[in-house]
Image (cartoon, rainbow, N blue to C red; front, side, top):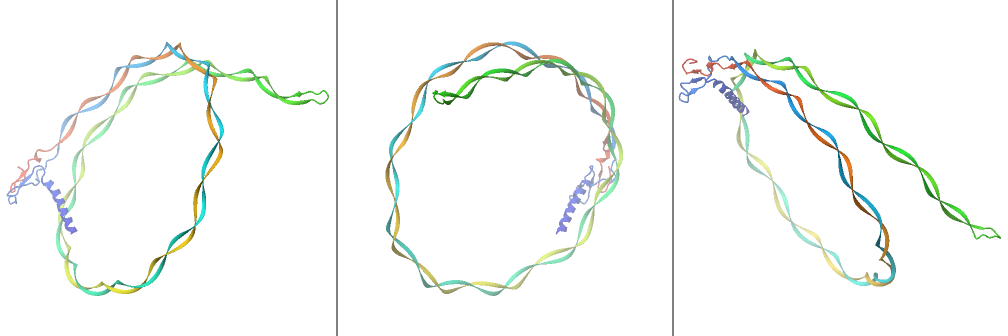
Length: 448
């Protein structure tokens, strides 16, 4: 079966290859005895192949050229401007004001209160309880059991047998035939040439300028202050002319001058020289290489592969299936129910009542009394001095520098690209006149 499908697939491929070969360039052949009542059959005309001709043709192509033009450009420069402005400042003023404030102080007092506690009291009581006991007894019962019985039976079965036979068949193979043909091809070569062009280069120029900068300096200063110092001295108490004098120790505070160094920060101005670099535009000329593509036509030999169908014959083995019926013996197992008897033990539950003593706990409320401390808050009004700061609006005048943008129009040189057309003659292939008019009858000549 696989070989039959392969032969059908090869036949379809041959038809697809042969059909385009027969329907070429309008060549026709009329078959007198065809099944379509003398309809046209398209076949290739063997003697009508015309060579490919080349004719000159002028085409227009474009190349890039760079040109320069003067373009006005508006640039903006920032210029500093000094101006006088008026602004308002909030000046704080602090004063001491007497205010009445209310403070809340916590006070405590002792008071009597009572509470209830729950105490647990345990006692013994008699209770009636029921117990359940299991009592066994023997009884007879019957049950059904499935037993398996083996037997042999004859059955009719159908088997599928494979029968083979030899048969002749034919198939078509596509063989590749290689031939050499001459073809016209166009190659493109790159041709280089030197040309001059102008470009703008920014040249750096460095100058030295004097500038002013501010910096901070820490200046040490000696400051003398009075510092309180405490010391302990012996002071006589109740001098006794007849005996020793007793002394006590007292702490005396005295002011002692102390000198320390305080660092203050001062701002100073210094003038220094700074290098400033600017760029100047300079026009320069240079030379560069421009590459262009030039077509060239030449004749080469190429290998052309054609597919030719070839019919072959051979022998193959064909297998067919036949159904055969035969009788066989098979073992069969059957399930037969059987009744049996046996004895089993059955348990029954019997209730029994008896009296027992149990411990019972009861909760009894008990009232108790005691003293506890109660805290409460009471308001106290007093007068204090608080600093109050108010802001006074004050108008001041200052000077500031504002940067203003000024537009300046300058003329610069701009390079742009232009596509310039030029004509060129090339060789174009043209088909021959005999490629579409070849018609051959069934009994006539090749071409009319």
